[in-house]
Image (cartoon, rainbow, N blue to C red; front, side, top):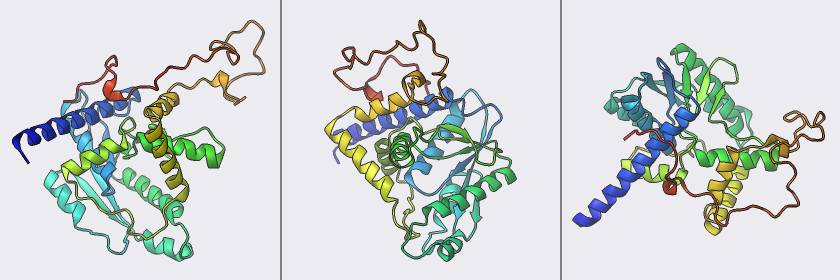
Length: 301
């Protein structure tokens, strides 16, 4: 690679890194994910998302005005072929506190689920319970997961198509048992950026297909649909995510979310009924975050 090509590649990487750090910092601030004195358990699976999450949170730990601790956790589920040495070696080099939890959930799942059937649901429930228990044992105040913007959008459509709910994957929520706060600091980050970053950082990726279970076909189809939309209609994905942050309950149909029964004549709510008006739709979809300059950001570089 020529000197000019190397310089360009480094420039693009620096830009990518700053974008991921900025968006992570923005999400942390918007949802008050991290507070002074927090002890955050970072769930590390060995995939691109969790490596990027840990890397970005370590940077945030160095520059943020609040002080918090990080430690990594990995659940070794005893899947055949799982490279047990990869994560300990990586984490030892980082010098970060970590714990490898060994639980043979693989055998439990394969004993219960018939061969050829999807094991993801049961496996996820078992994994979640173990992580909650470990967080309590380790004194964690927050549990950080590596889900990103695209995961949240996919989940929105999965719930609409198959669950009949207008519901997504929240950036911050209380755990199932009511004891832990779960955060997703990469909520504003795009999967394509994370993929590029993980490749450039040469993270020791552990494949996610070790268990041999079938991929969730519903999520696969939804992901393909969104990818096709993004190809045909640039900006549509950004508009969808923006819409998730601009909900108007009075213009939906959930009678429990908005008090339609007590709505009286003369009450103009959120602009009233403009269904018959000429649509006020922009010629271009919402812009990508790279092209938006008039936003408040946190400087994490």
